Image (cartoon, rainbow over the protein chains, first blue to last red):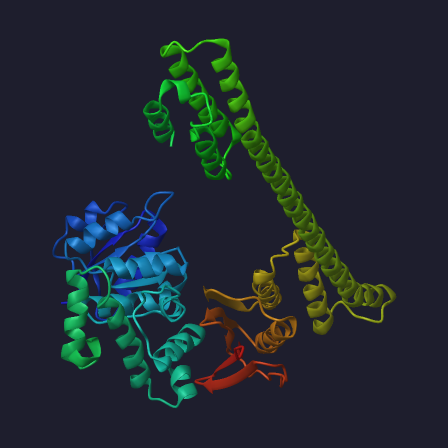
Length: 213
Length: 284
């Protein structure tokens, strides 16, 4: 049986769109519930992941609701119309599995959900750009190559092009992008979802304990 | 200080309070002159007055209100205090003058800066109008006298570019830091008019580029976008002091060779997509 999710979004058209993508996915992703409020997700503890619109009310982004979901141990894929870096990085810091802008939905939402339910990192290009250009002094330290690969991923939205440019295999490009995401999971506020990402990355050999230093 | 002065007065024989033996006036007063040198005149005057009143009170309390004592007191008081007051007044006046001079200098500097900004803005506008005259007028004349065909794609593109520039000029988006983003938006606008679906993303903090570097980045993006058939991805990023413009299209771009300081370009092709990157990375 395929994974199951809950959709928290107050735009019926978005909910319908995500439902349609999930129904077409192979294997199918089941949508257990959907609604405009975060309670709909908290009331479905069996769902494997939550698609969460960050802007449920006009005004400030719903960081509080995101924190509630993360503290309840839910894997959250933030799906937002906010395109700014600060919001994306803040969501990672709070413990979201990944962050997608609504413009990235069609290609990246289903793969992001699949990765999230397996506690594997998934970094869509715009999030990659936010990480590559992260100007905060306390950001996790990236190697020059990691930053270049992430910037290239942001620019091209194609792991094949990135691989071609740096004469790497697509798998190695994936490893670089995944490793950076784990560095971000290992920083800042602790959360079970972050710990699960790090643990899975260790199992998969994406990182080793020395790399976490 | 006042307490010390009071003690000095109290320890003296009442007969000496008004006389030369009471050096307290002078010494304490001069120290106050120094202490209040940077502050307001009011505090200093109040302390001097309190001190004098206290000594006067002391004289009255000990019954020495005869004319000679009072005159002696008055002479000492006026003699010593007037010098101190004069110095304090002079200091205060000097401070006022200095402050006014500083204010005047600051406002003059502000005025000069505003003038400079206005001058630069004006020059910038003049330059843009000149550029527009060079681009738009021949186009309009050509279409008017029939030498340029409005159905010619080249003419359409030139017209779209001039129109975008006009719109920007009327909107007066003069913010230098975002001039690059605005020019890029104009290029995207042109591509979209051809029916190309463009996705645009911007990341990071960007420094202001030298004009030739900005021109080189835009020329690279323009060439790449020009080759797009149906879809393009345009990104603008500021990373570690460098500014990077990336364009991925479904066409084969021919990127001009640029010889501009600190600007490098790269072109990568894979799976039917062409990715053109132009990067300004100042060596510092």
